[in-house]
Length: 347
Image (tube, rainbow, N blue to C red; front, side, top):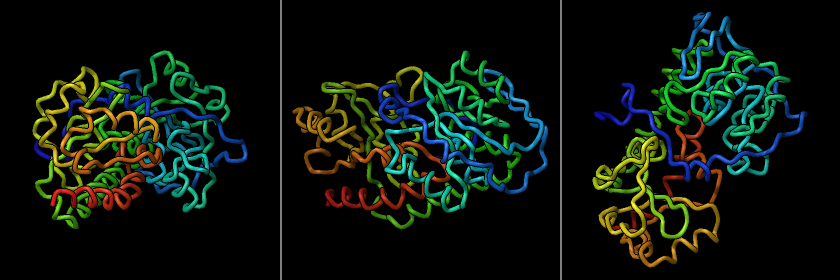
């Protein structure tokens, strides 16, 4: 890829099933008192009717949607950034804070003065009844795992925008373009993409010490396992956008088909010996202790010298795994101090 933020259509890939299970955890529904009303949105570019083709079908959107429901990740954030607070969103209990919402969504909606969206179950057990009650004008799910059977039900509730190729496979910039088109705000969508690029570039410019620092982003699925996220995975793109460099060895690993990750096994941990920094995440302190006590894991140079960047904060782990208009500013201010501390261990 010639550029980190290549606008060309790249190979669509998803995160590993194991890592996705850790990040995408379904929660329960919020109380009806939190149900949102359509917010005052920015003016449409007048592009209606709109037809958006996906792998599962074509959504015909006759006029600018006022009531939006989102499934999967990232779509709610983009809709909010474009001026339309959804009336309903899929819930993520694992990454939510005490408010019961993903904190960057809660903060953005409250700042706008809108009511919080109604939250409902998604994943394998989509709460179709709640979605129906919300009477949406459109259902946005371009980065989701919606199945064909689920889509057939959703499309009868409202025009439904699914993924272009594979589940959980839409690039972050493509997702913004799709949602912006569905809301009749393509020009504003382009602006959001450029703004994200600028935010990361500006942050990178403040950290010249990151130049030539290599990293690998690893994950585990229990003792004995070791996986590595590949360069086009969103959490890796977030870091390269901040000026770090993916360890060249990562590009030699074979992708697990249908993912943007490689499983190398803990027995091959030595292959990451030249990674200056290692990034990862844990579900809790107990899991972290189990993983880090493994001799082969502890022997990795980056782990031995304390050049490991990690977090058990589920909100941070979730936000740093997805690139969208709300997560990037929320993550960057928290990420930089963590990375700074790890880079100091290289001196």
